[in-house]
Image 1 (tube, rainbow, N blue to C red):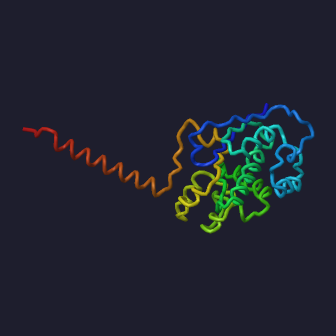
Image 2: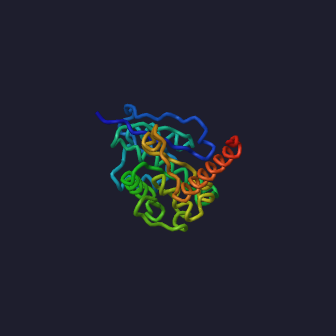
Image 3: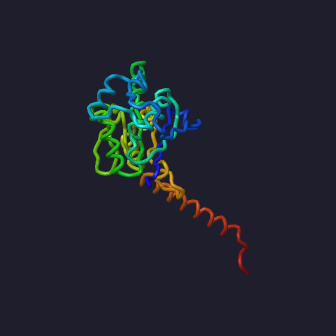
Length: 232
C-alpha cells in the first residue's frame, strides 16, 4: 500500500490565513485529455517543456490541482508517491508567475520548502525542467552554493527550512525576496511540521536567545536574594 503524500500551497502572504482548497487525486473522468484541454491558458512554452519530458496527459492529481492553482487558490494536495504531485503544483504556479511578470510585477517567484535534501534536489530538477532555465531555479540545501544576485533573479527557490533561513539572513534579502514570492509550497508538509517542534533558528539567534535566558535567570536570582529575609 502506497502512502499519501501531502503538499500545501499558499498564494500570496494573505493566503497564509485563508482556507485551503482540498485537491485529492480522483479517478480520471476525461481519458486522453491533454494539458491544453485541461487549461487552455497554460503558456505554450511550459506545455512544450512537459512534452520534452514525455509528460503529455495529466495525472488525476494534476487534473484536480491545475485549475484551482492557476486561479490563485491556496490548496492542499494529497496523492500517492509517483503520482505527479510535483508537476501538479509547479506547473500552474510557474504559469501564474509568468502572468504576474507580464502584468508588470518584478521578480515574482515561488518558494518551495522540503523536509530533506534529497527531496529538494528532486524538486529543483523538476522545476528546472518546467522553467527551462536552470539559472532561474536556486537550491538552498547543505552543500549547495548560491549568491544574493542569483536568489533575487530566481523564478523558483527550493530549500530545506534551516538553509533557507540561513541564506536569506546572510544575504540580507529576506524582506525583498519574501515580498516577491507569489506562492509558497510546503511539500510533504506532515514531515515539515511534525507534532514535535523543530528549531530551525540560526546559530546566532539561538545564541542570543540563550544569553537572554541566562540574563533573565540571573536577574530573577538577584531579586529573590534581595527580597529574602536576612538571617539572625
